[in-house]
Image 1: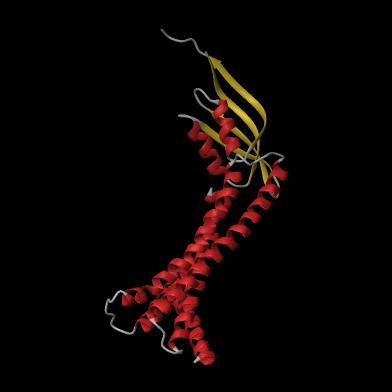
Image 2: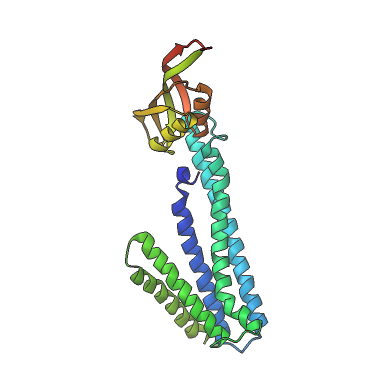
Length: 184
Length: 89
């Protein structure tokens, strides 16, 4: 089913794009808190979690609606060319299931990456001592994940993983700088 | 009892799955099937293939079913070779 629809490429692309969305959003939120009046850790966690859930829902719903429409259109065109009903074939099944799979990846990528980035906050809130301030720890985790997303992109593209990782890291650093500029 | 030894089919199919996956799926339907696919025509969305299947006892319904499952459409049976064999014992 995945082979027929060449879904691997789309899934990979959506994972990176939306994972990046989640990571940068969390980075932006935390830097915003850092340059503002100190807020309670539970407030920071709730705000970031709310954003993570919204990102996940947005990713999942938008991907499902758009992919389902595209698959239905493509199936219709193929049925017209084949002059036959393909609803019961692998193509029909793919048109029904692939949008769900893509929606799952599109929604879960930003959500899971956001949860990973927020891990230092959970730990600090649970009373577990960290080597540095929770907000700075979150920023470091976010930068590491953004770098790793870049490395993954580099491997897909067949280019230097280091260069690709640094490129995405640069984007994160510029984002942080802009936030400090506007909000700091 | 009559066994189908060889059939040649004219099949219209989408480009995906490709010829290798298509022929593998047909071969998996039987134990000793030998499958040969040849391109007859091709357009933007579909391709017409000649499919030759040889085996000791070809299950035509199963072959037809797998072609349909993969989005293919059987246009015609162009060649058939059957053989009657008496049961021993």
